[in-house]
Length: 96
Image 1 (spheres, rainbow, N blue to C red):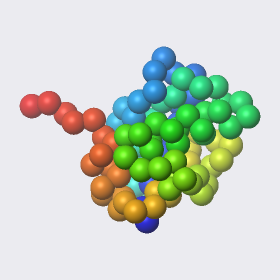
Image 2: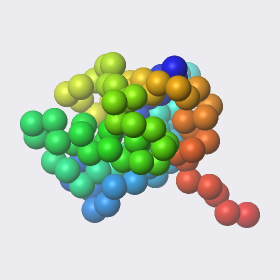
Image 3: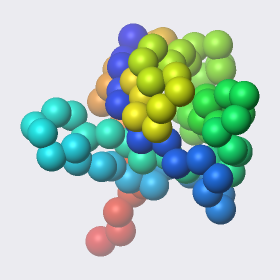
Image 4: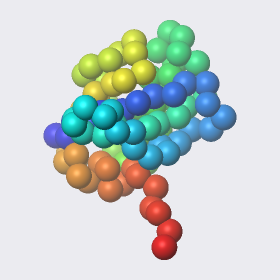
């Protein structure tokens, strides 16, 4: 079971995981996710879980927000994947 920090941007122009954001305090960089849903009535969180489930190839029920339910900075727990596998599947591949 992997835990990973996420920085969520609601009301974006598209749904995507766009990269990483270094918090500058020596902790693990957070993945940056953007969703078109507004941060109202859990819509942005639901859109985030749907996006990650699709990109990771896991059921939505395998993803839980364990910290930051109402904020932009969240900790998500994904059952069946390690943090390294999660990052590998979600981060955009940089071209050479």
